[in-house]
Image (cartoon, rainbow, N blue to C red; front, side, top):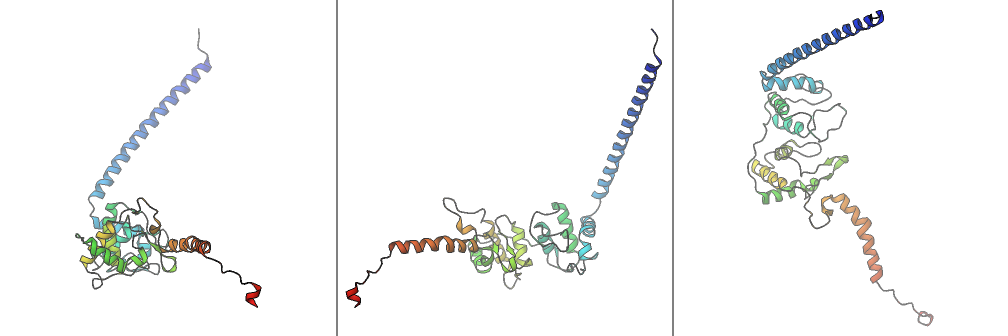
Length: 268
């Protein structure tokens, strides 16, 4: 039995296709191997860089277009010279920076970088001047912290740390999940409408006391009852106006007595 010419042609085509597939697989494997070597070399090079170098590179990539290549500020953002590591650490770890656009509102949120990148950026910004360093915290007195919090913070953040809306619609955020370091930094930095508190207003021990009090607030403490006091003065006022006041009027009406009508003889 003899092979047909068409069968031989198909066999040659299949052999050629198999050779091409094998060659492509070998080329892909080689490319992956090269890529791994290149990636490993890049990682090795990155590991030899200092934190300051990495911070500067990230700054030039993500921050310089607003704050300037040397951190001196532009028309879009203020100077970072002498701002210090404290402010940089606060704004980066609370997600307030960087912004995706100069017109974007500064709001707290999840941080945009991992811890190592934030630390590198903080060191670099701190090297731009003689600003305050990241504060070192010590143990605080919760009782005194509660007193100081009531005098200086509760008007905006509420006594339970739930936060509220202050001037121009700016929020005073809830503090239950704020880290100790960020509470201490916020006191000194004064983000948004919050005023900064200098050492003459609150010394470091008093800051430690406030941090200790805020840290023990935890989640809403309303076990066994309604957490109305956890929602802030605006919600409380609305409930009092539209729920409690009408109920009080109804009770007064039910308990009150109508004055007896005077007869015509008495009226005459």
